[in-house]
Amino acid sequence: MANQELIKNIPFSESCVLADLIDYQKGRVVSRTFVENNALSLALFAFDQGEGLSTHTTSGDAMVQVVDGRAGLTIGGKEVVVKAGEIVVMPADVPHSVNAVEPFKMLLTVVKKGMDRGRKCLPFSSNGPFKKAA
Image (cartoon, rainbow, N blue to C red):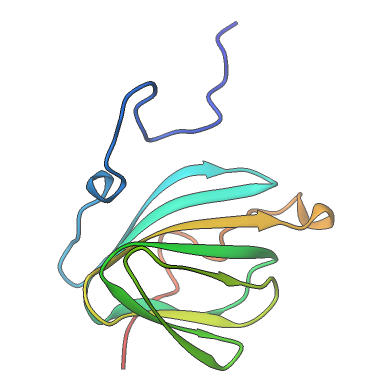
């Protein structure tokens, strides 16, 4: 029986530049999922300027690591601007949104609460809630 890979969509045993693993697409939000299970979600996102994620909550703490560009986050009504090299944590169950001030890439890590481990981590499907920033 072959070993089950816990991490997907990334080469094993070789060096990679994180920002190069995903490309910007005009007018879109693009994602590449590395881990999605009942305890953890790890995904790389690329947002074109003016794109974003509408206000939503997630049942786990979410850490945004900005890989490229700059974005505005709203977390529980508080505005936070982040740029490449910075991180911010969005607490579980607190409404938050993301807006790309310029083309922006982030690595999103969502760690689920123990009691919620039967549900998926990401609060959206590949079809949304992506939105155009106002």
